[in-house]
Image (tube, rainbow, N blue to C red):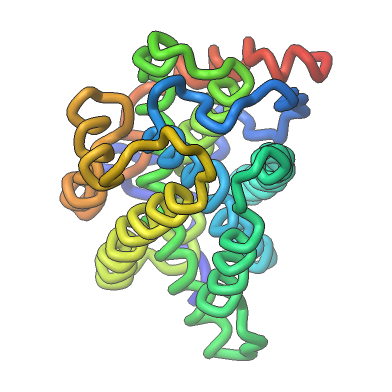
Length: 302
């Protein structure tokens, strides 16, 4: 049966969507990437390409996520959750458009990302698309996709928090447009961190499915990060990119320039804890403050 009703148990408290004042809406933004160099974190080739994975590769999964939520919308009878889902889909559409502009720029200065992103898009569509199913099979596959995406969104919210708090990126002189792009995206990931989870719980809520899909999400994202980073490093045409990209990754992690790959292992127990809800990740005040003052949002007239 679709739907768990208006009230969801979160720990010892009840969470009513209608009681929440915060509305999720897509924001107009305007980025200028014309002056962005190949290595927009100076002296950090590998760290630059890890950030590239965050904003060039992961958005392909976000497209599929938005599509799954759009398919789920007719089955959601809670008006507040429906509003959140519509806002989420709008934000993910804006993410895709903004990252597309960054991708075009990086391609124009010599980083071949088009072919790889195209392959990722093809793979995501084949694995996580709707497959033209109908009836009971369609319902079960939609629930499975939402479970997977809820698990993935946990990691993007955690990475979003890291981006908002990573002062080291400013200290290293990261190009302002790229810093604004990833922090704006990260802030919206924090802002809408509960939406996919709540949609999954509303349509299904099975702990067995939640656990299975969370483990699978973690098992998919970690290899995707490693393979994608290695690909972008190899495609980097610069002569001064250094050697042994794996060692560069470990070094950058040790210095805190990139988040640790272990996040895909250490966050899993928290997500699987009974009573967990994404709102427990921490306050979103910093994310909302950043969204209110983002240079790209101001450039768009906000």
